[in-house]
Image (cartoon, rainbow, N blue to C red; front, side, top):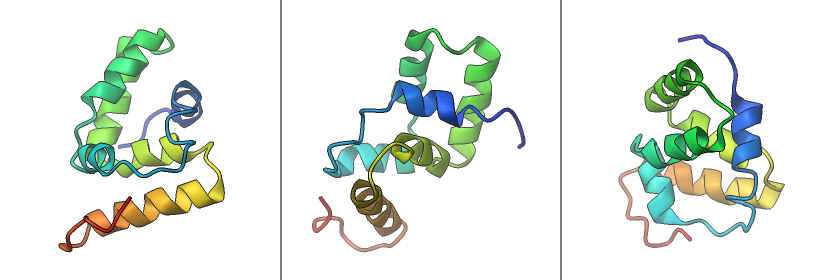
Amino acid sequence: MQGPDYRELVAAVFAAEFDEGVVEVAVLRRIHAGQVTEWLEALDRSGLFGRDALATIADQWRADPAVLLDALLSTSDDVTRRRWLMAWSALDRPEPLGRIG
């Protein structure tokens, strides 16, 4: 699905979310599983997005949750970004996640 790119606005809303560099596995698992409601509600509360924009963003995130992760990490430093992306890739493998975080 091709639609408007809201990445920069989404990144601005969530700029401080992942800046600490600590990988919270529970948060990452929810995003990876496509559980994006809490993030959509936060965007709705921001007042920056209309219903059509929120619907488009919801469709994009549900089709590919990595789009949300990419937006969340867009303002993070390289080390933080690498930590989260490594943890994300571990979710794609059937290995236990006890070592992540």
